[in-house]
Image (cartoon, rainbow, N blue to C red):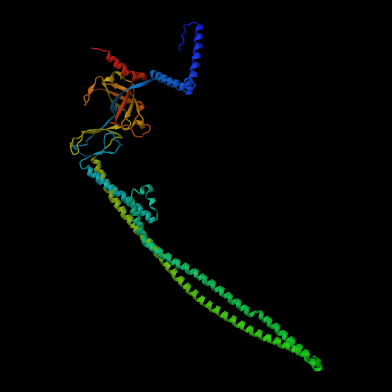
Length: 522
């Protein structure tokens, strides 16, 4: 229920009280619909208010930026790079026909480089190039021959990066090595094999010597054992015992003759003596057998030593034979190396003669070509090439092409549309985009308008265009990110700044233009 604010305060208070009661009754009536009551009484979210305020603020800022901000308005024209004065005009040295043009417009040339050929120049040039190629090949082959003769590697002649550029030289070096080393390699392999046999038999000889020494040591041991035997000492001890007991027996025998009671003593002494004599006999038999066995072993070892000595002598003879073979092979290798070196020396002399002949041919060809070749008088950029038909006769001093000096100042001839000429004046800044250097990567050159034609000229497509000249600032001829220079004849696009406009004008221009045209009548 709406409250009338024009009523007195008492009535307003009363009206507000009635409204509160009505709302209370409504809440009671809707007690079975709490979701509706909660929805009606829930306040607006703070986040929604913040978002709404933010959108309004952004719209206002954009409007202010569009109203205050300005954009540059440019007039775009196309043109071509040219040079100021100092252009060299290259002419025909005599009446003749051009057979080959070696340059194109915009190409960078160095002083002395070939511009074009006339008469039979082309064939002479081809012949000279072929001869020079053969001469280079011969010089490299001579260096390779010297390297092979001196035992040097191919990398001493060519850099590793150049070896792949001269596969024929690499093949020539490989062939020389294979031919030069084939015989020597066979001899060295044979010598190595014979030297291996010498080493093998020397080891066997050392083994035989060791075996002889070991066997002789055994013979000495057995001989010493035979002469200084423990059994002999035992035998001497037993014989001494027998002698002592014989003396004791004789003593008891004499006593028995005097007194019969000594008979038992005599008989015991006799038995002991006889027992010892039997042991002496046994020991002698054992010693005899042991002596025979030692003598047998000594004889065996002496026979072994004799056989080993015979083997040693045979081994030494074999070693001497193989050593003689090694010496002979070494001599053959030295002779083969000397022969190959002499052969290589002769090949070097032959190559030197060939080089002299081809060098004379090259010098002669260069003299002939020099008389029928037009060279660049200066370093610079090829400008305009006149319309020249190959094979057509040209008169003496007839101009063929122009060369712009390397350090000449560039300017640009720009074509400007009729509707933009009123905004163009001398001194305006110009951004120049060169078609050969994409401005997205290389950037642009900067210059100024230095000339505007007073009248427009009709172009090939029928449009009327004004000509303007743009000079580069600080004699720029190349981009910082590219070492190549801007050359004569390169097409460019020039952006001339003719003013500034507010951003909002771009949005309202279609509307104002439409309204301006709508409310006008004839």
